[in-house]
Length: 112
Image 1 (cartoon, one colour):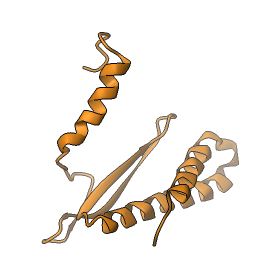
Image 2 (tube, rainbow, N blue to C red):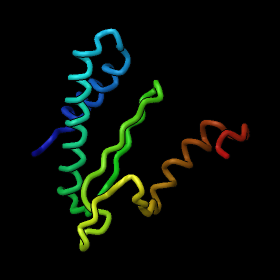
Image 3 (cartoon, rainbow, N blue to C red):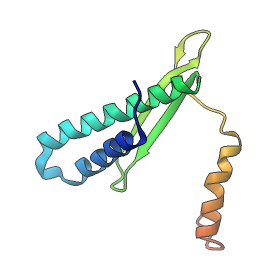
């Protein structure tokens, strides 16, 4: 199953919009569920396409709600699925988190 960036973005936007309009709960719940399913499918395809044994994708929205998507195995040989307690090595990607933080709030102590 190939999911384009456009379909993924549409699903993520739909999820965001669904959370901001609580008055239409039943229709929005359906839309939200479809969006989350599309995001999970995207994570599964991405994992397989890049040959990753497992991954976790977190989606956080401005209203404070969040979802976590697990795909694949924490231990591929033992076929142990990725779960809530799975730890990943972060490696050099942490630089992409630290740089924007240090640029956006220098000297105010908000980066720890």
